[in-house]
Length: 231
Image (cartoon, rainbow, N blue to C red; front, side):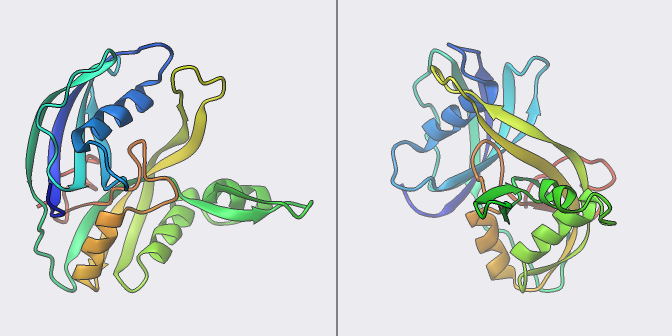
């Protein structure tokens, strides 16, 4: 397995099993594509799901090529894998659409002095319910900070936001996180650093379908509000 960046389009069959949630099963099936490794080395985004969530089309960005046919599991299988090298040609000052499902958090100090990590909008609302900023502005500002010196965020809006509950077999308490889907346009300042940022992922949690910054030609994401292929 090489360390070249690879972009894959994967079709998964996902079946509930022993209390495991759909998000957890999807995560495990994607992990099977890359095998045992010391680092995660991949990001993914669920692009489409069938009614009931039994089929998922997933975009995977990984270091190294995926296994085209990992063994099936009792709770699902990889139906198909199409991959290609990820080597986009991006020029300085290029304007691109973006879309990202992001777990954006900040550290908040409680009155007791204890520190905890919380969603950026929850933190703003808890601190001041009269804060004039909208969730769109708060999440866009978060992405601006993460891409400072790399790209200028021209606009952004939230198209979906909610708590994600990931339940593993046998767990009494699920893993919970807040995920928001942010779309907009950006202007590239440093193409190489932008590609590195895409490969590293953005946000606190880069598992369970979060963290992959998807880029496409202007006018592909905003009008139709759906993910367009990276080129």
